[in-house]
Image 1 (cartoon, rainbow, N blue to C red):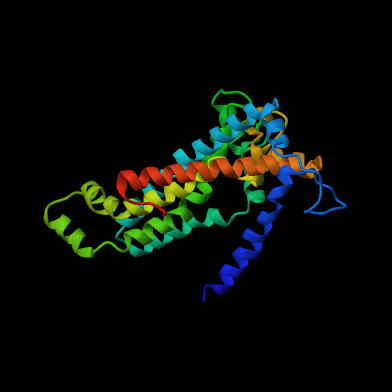
Image 2 (image 1 turned 90 degrees about the vertical axis):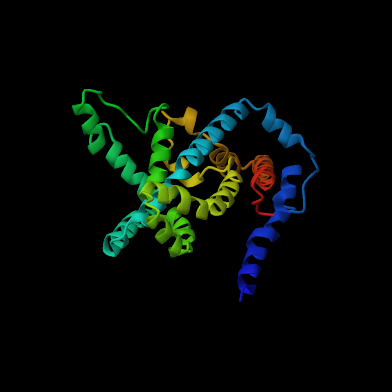
Length: 285
């Protein structure tokens, strides 16, 4: 039954890895993926020596780590709160409500942000003006770009990401709740001593997987939120690769940057997996 999925992954994930060699060659349209002069690590050196290298690394790490550190605990907290609801109708209504933003496309999401945060016509813009803060352009400021990106990401995906934690909580033996209740445990104590230990393995595994995306910020959202005013903090590796590779037609150079990005992500994933295996005996492999 899993054979079709294996075939799809092999075709679309493993076969294209042959194109990695472009990072070490001069791409030539007439010779295809197998042609071009061998350049070795020249394109990697070019990227490391580029004046953009420091800013790209800084922006990518800041956005990614901020997103991970703030958005990772959010679905855990939400799942714990939902799990405490005993009224089934209210629980289902809340779950449906928090799941819905996940199905909004990135384009529509950024459009909503532009409408809501506009300093001239947006609701939040008018609210800030009425509070005496002046015309604050939240999408055009280098100081507010990252908070807006992270908060909107939490709002959009927090509910959906809580599903896996709710599934883990559903496996908790009901007798544990009965025992906690008989012992006089409060709701907070029940969460601390019953719910949290039950989802710790899930939390660790998902955190290890998230560390494999430290340098992989979402291209679509960052690119759509970019403008000349916030570009100093919004230009990340993913958007730079697009501009260099697709717009400027520097395919080998962009392939080298993309390969560097992937290698760093793999190192973070491997290191975090080794750390969790040693400290908690829970790991991916």
